[in-house]
Amino acid sequence: MTAPAVPAAPQHRVPVEHRFLGLDKRTIPFAAVALAVWLLWAVVLPWVNSQVDYTNPVEAGDEVLVSARGVTFTPTPGWDLQQGIRTTEATRSGAVPSDVVLVQDGVTFAVQPGPWSGTAGELLAQVEEAPTVGTFGDTEVDLVGDATTITTIDGDVGVGQGFTTNRGNGVAAAYVFGEEGILIEVLGTPEQIGQHSDQIVDMIASFTDEEAA
Image (cartoon, rainbow, N blue to C red; front, side, top):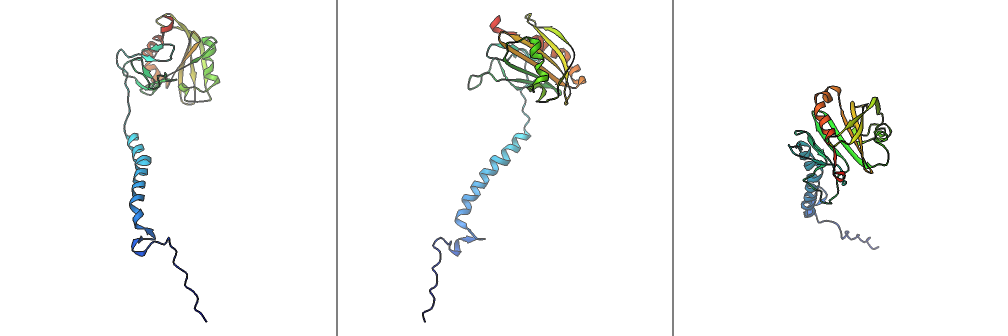
């Protein structure tokens, strides 16, 4: 009777001298490098970024570009420009950012431009009808009080009105320049807004339309 044949060892089996805890020791350095790269991008860099305070304070003489039409305004020095570009800056694509956001002491001053064929009053009503950048997407936004006429230094006439959200109180203003609407929203507590009321009024009044000049 012939003894049963012993099956041949699998050709892919790693020799014992190259094994460590069941792994091929020769692949460990490559796996370690891959793990280190993953940790760098997924853990270390986001943590470092979260620890660094990014500020972009407005300086005297700065003007912020709101739209490609040439609508600009002059922020109060010291406010932090979190979104948007100055008239002296440009994006790589050459496009103008769609929104502008400035902050100071808990107050957010947001500007949202866009095509508009209606009146300034109709644009102001959009604060209640659709989430916007200045209300951080809150769906419960209510205009309060009566709308008032506001006039820029250049004589352009718009409308303004107070509003409330789940996050705080605010003031909204709207202008129409040609076929473009500009919606301005200032959000904060009554105390915060009150402390910066003069600066807010000055910034809203500084909006100018270069195309109409």
